[in-house]
Image (cartoon, rainbow over all chains, first blue to last red; front, side, top):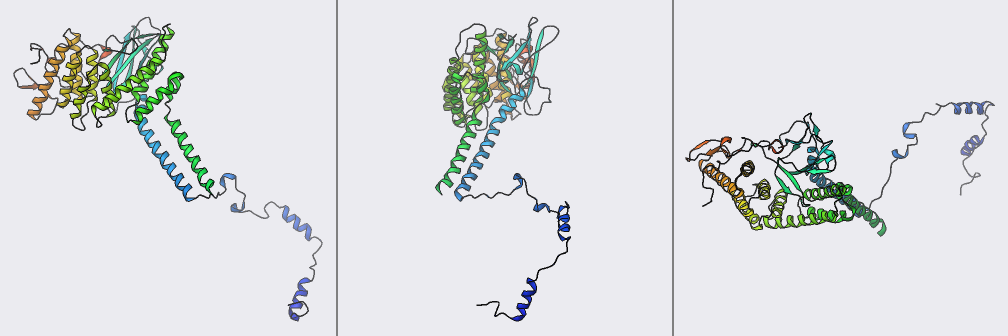
Length: 198
Length: 270
C-alpha cells in the first residue's frame, strides 16, 4: 500500500508545492466577472447552439417486420395514387370540356360544337348534358340581340345527350336534334361528334 | 415485443384503408345525390369499377335523373328518388349483359355502348356477333349509332344486322358516323326508316368491298352506278334536309366518305 509516508521524497516535494495555496490579487474576481459579462466573450459555434424541435435529430427504432409493413404500405399507396390519377384523367378531360372553352384545339379529337336555341322571352338558359355532369351552372348560354341563345362546347368524338333548362324551371329538348327517351317520360336530345377524317 | 410489431402494422393498415375509402367516394354523388339512395348507388359504381367497367355512365345517370327529379318536384310533380336507383341498377345490369355478350376483349367504351343498345331493344345475339371483330378494331361509335337509329324508329333487327355487318367488314368510325347522318336525313325527308338503312348500309358495304378489291385507301372513293370509281361527292348522298344549326355535326358535311344515295334503287334487300 502506498501512503504519503513511504513515497519518494521528490514526489512528496512536488505534492507539497501543488498544495500550496495560490495567492490572487484583490481585483481577480472583478476581472473575471467583467469578462463574463461581455456578450462576446465566448463565441458559440452554430453546432453548439440549441436547435429548434424541427432541427433536432430523431432516432427511430424499427423492427424488420415493421419496416416491411411500412414499405408495403408506401408501395400500395403509390400504386393507388397512380391508379387514381390514371382513372381520373378522362374525368378531368370531361370537366375541361364543359362550358365555352376558348383554348386552341389540340390534335386529340376535341371539336367545338355550338348549341343553339331560339327563345326571345327567356331570362336565362342553361345547357345540361352528360358532358358537364348535368350541371347547368357549368354551361350558360349567351343571348344575342335576336333572341338566339348559344354556347360553344369542346367535345371529344362520341355521342352526348343534353337538354336546355329555361329560366331554371322548364326543361326542353333541342327540336333540331334527334331525341331519345330519358327514362322519366321526357326526352333528351342527342349530338354526335364525328371523328374527323385524318 | 408483439405489440411493438403489431401496433404500427395495425395503424398502417387502418390508414391505408381510410385513404382508400376516402379516395373512392365520388364527390359528385356525395354532393348531389339524395342520401337515402347514395350508398346504394355508390355500391353499384364500386361494383362496376371492380369489374373493370366504366363508372362514368352510372354516375352520369344518377346525376341526370336526380337533377330532373328536382326540377320536376319544383313544378309540383311527385317523383321519388328511388327512381334514380332503379335506373342505375337497370343500367348496371345491361352493362353486365353487354360485357358477357361482347366478350372479355371488349373495351369499356364498347361495353357502355352495348348496354345502351340493349336498352334500346337490340337483341343480345347481335352483340355476340361482335366477338368476331379483330382485336384492335374499335366499334363503340358504331354501337352508339345503332342505338340512335333504333331510337329514331329504325327496326332494331334490321339496324343491328346492318351495323354489325359493316363493323365486321371493317367500316371506320367516320364511315359509320356519315352513314348515321345520312340515314337521319333520309328519315327526316320522309323515307321509311327501314328502307333508309338498308339502302345506305348496302351502299357502304359496296364501297368497302370496292376499296378492298382495289387496294385503295379506305374512304377516298365511291362507286358509281356503272361500277367505275369516282371521287367522293357529298352531293351524291341523296336527300339532304338542311342540317339545322342545333344538330350540326362537325366534320360530317362532305368530309367523310358516303355511300351512294338510295335514289332510283330497289330499296328491298335481296
